[in-house]
Image (cartoon, each protein chain N blue to C red):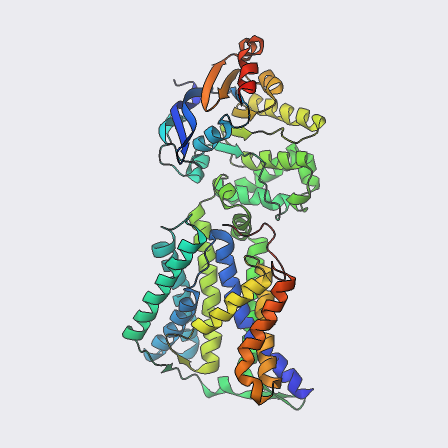
Length: 295
Length: 238
C-alpha cells in the first residue's frame, strides 16, 4: 500500500511531464497541422537556459524563470524562421522541416556547449524528501505534480475564458474561417507556439530539477513519449494529449516498479504494446479530436 | 466608379489547369444587393472566395471601396470592411454561441466595442441570446445561419459576402433569412448574394449577374432577367 502510493506519486509526476509536452505538440498540431519533431529541442534549450544562467551566477529560482523564457523564445523563433514560410504545406513537408530544425539545434547544442551532460547543482533541499504518515515522499515529484496542475489549470483558463484562447480553439476547428472573420492568423499561431514553448519550458524545469543535468538529447526521449501520448489520446485532441501523457507515465512507472527484473529490458516494448492494443480497439485514440485532424 | 463598393474586372480564378472563373466583370453598388446566380459549378463560390482573398486571383482585378486587393490576405480584406458568411455557414461548432461572437470580435474592434456589438447581436437575434451558452453545433440550421450572419456583422462591415444563405433551410427560415438580408440593406450595408434560389434572390436584388461555366451569361436589372430565357438556360447549361 505504502509503495503503491509512492509509485502513484511518481506516476503522476512523470505523467504530468508527458502530458505537458503532449499538450504542447497537440496545440500546435491542431492549429497548423504541424507535428513538431523539434519540440524536444525546445525543452532542451530551456534546460540549457537554466544551466547557462546558473553559470552566470543567477540564483536557482531566477535561473528556472530564465529557462522558461528561453523555451518560449525558442518556440517563437522556430515559428517565425522555419514554420511560417511553410504555412499551408502538407503534413509531411512540415514534419521534415521540423526534423531539420531539430538536427540543426542538436548540432548547435553539441558544438556550442557540450555533447556530454552538463551538471546543474540545485540546492540540496530540492532533492530531499519529507514524511507523511510514515511515508517518504520526494520534494521534487511533489513539486512537479503541483506545477503540472497549476500549468494545466492556467492553460484551461486561457483556452476557456480568454478571447485569444477561444480563437485558438476556433482555429483548431476551422483556421480559414477564422481568417475570414478578420482574425490575424499569425497572432493566433504565434500564441499557440508560445504556449507550447512555455509548457516545454515547464517540463524542462521539472526534468532538470529532478535529474540535475542537461545534455543535447535531454528533450528527445520525453518528447518521443509525448508523441505516443498524443496518438494514444487522439491526434489533435488537447484533452486526449493530457490523458495519453498520464496513461503512458503511469504505465512506465508501474512496469518499472512491479515488473520482474528479467522482464525489465522489455519495459518500453510492453508499454508500447499496450498502446497498440488500445489503438486497435480505438483507432482514433482515447478522446478523438472533435473536428478531425487538419491535413 | 465611385458609387460601387466592389468592383470586379476581368477576374480569372484557376485551380491548377482548370479555369473556374473566366474573365468576369461586375460590381456591387453602394447600398445595393447584387445577386450572383447560376448552376452548381458555375464559378459563383470561386468568385466569392477570390474576392475574399481566400483563393488567389489568377488574373484581373478586384477592388474593394476603391482599393485593389491584389495581394491582401483574407483577414486584411475583412478588416477593411467586409463581412463573410461562407458556404455551409462554417460556424465553430465546438464553441458556444457567445464564444463564436467573441472570437469574431477580437479581430475588428476594441474589447468594449466588441462587447457592445455582441449585445446588439443578441438583441437583433433573440434566439442567439437565449442560446448564448449552448454549443453552436447544437443549433438548428437556421439558427446557425443567423449566428453566421451575426458573426460576420461583428466587424460592422460595409459589404457583406453571403454564399447560399438559404441552402438546406426550412421554407419559413428561408423567409426569415431573406427578411434579415433586406433589413441589413436598409441599414446601408451593401451585399453580394450568391444564391441557388434565383426567384428569391431576384426579389431582393437590384442587380443580378448570371454565371455559367465560369463566364458571365448575362447581367442587369432583376426584372429584365426574370422575363429573359437567359436565366433558364444558365441553369440548364450545367
